[in-house]
Image 1 (cartoon, rainbow, N blue to C red):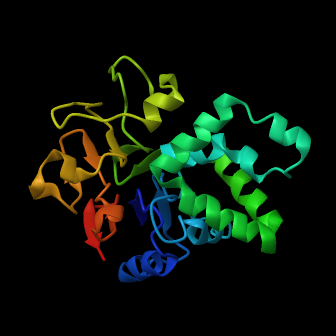
Image 2 (image 1 turned 90 degrees about the horizontal axis):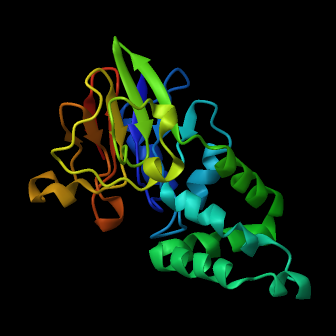
Length: 235
């Protein structure tokens, strides 16, 4: 079975494991997390990232919050007089923007982890650098595109390889948007409650795409979508 979830934003690892236990997730199953494990609350997702390092059957798709974290990876360098001089206005703006978007909890957790196990921090950063922007998946005669935010500036004439990182990380689709007719695009990024109160805390399905960001940092329970039959599971 193939499961997808998204936008956990600092969810406790125990809660993710509880959700996976609900579907009897095993070594024969696959899990895709469609970005934004980090930031917002608790330990900022660091425990889940450490867990992902050891999971052969779980894959993180890069989200815009992981991309923002990577843009601030300079904060993990050894602080010297030279590195302080290299902190340009541009870098400081990136850091300020990341903190304003909830990155402080992740930065603090990673700095604390660095004191205990600096190699684990660098393993996490390397893992994020290697995380794909999308995956193509086929199951039970259905084809899926898995990405973080949808497809910005969509055109049926464009293939998935033609989309830039920003177009896959920062899209904010209208509910009336249509994507590929023969491929279901699954993404997060836009909390489904943005499309109306009736979608709050629920997965939203349209004819051509599915939004699985149920708004975890806003107090909603995390969800899983099983691609094999499009069944939804909630904690």
